[in-house]
Length: 175
Length: 153
Image 1: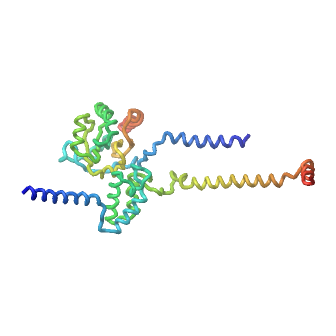
Image 2: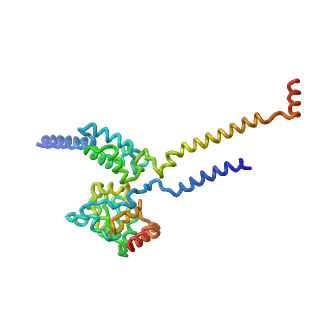
Image 3: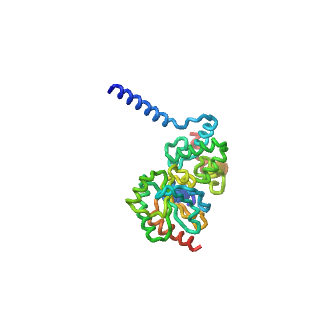
């Protein structure tokens, strides 16, 4: 009787692993930056290249840092959600315009709406590397002390916003 | 006159095409040692965009940016470890093709040996059981009679 059960046990263990594997995304590389200070930068603003923007300006606020580009289709998927979120005034969104041209980026924002308080122009992708960006869009939740609290890899979905990002921002704002 | 202009145009085009060729072959470096270090590191680090390729193999834009970043760090005289640490700080252990041994990677490092041990143990048990079966099962009288009957035929 025991012997007959052995193949079943092995099958269940393997099936368990495979089942778990179904819900894992190998493209999601956990970021070592979560829980660490957001890397500093000092980049030109998209709307006014004369002016600079740096994360220091956001100290004391909880904010979203959203890496995007006008050439990135997945960014366009999440864009309407960002626009809706920005209308509520719930949390400021700073954009990182990653390896883009100012003209294309501005054109896209004019056309689709601008959810960003400001955009930092990362033309050569250096700041993207500092933040561990490996595919746009990626979004960071940064707390009042300038620490990275969460990283969303890939487009922000309704579920991610409702179940993860909004509750987290609320919690951080209350701190 | 027209001929002159065509000649000039031809020369211009030729020069332009040289430029294009020159851009293609970008990573030429005067410092061979740096380039050796860059190639060594790039073949040990993973491209995050196409995850089954090394940075050296990948043509993804991010991979090329990272190789350029490594080249600049190598030119500054940073060691392999310093450069690897720089990338691990940003992208995590995932960028390394040989992950370090720590709590989260124990299964990865020791799993195969654990499986080998379990298999070896199973085999050992199985063989011993078989051996015991052979030793511990003397023929019954009935069987002994049948054997001699068959042998005497």
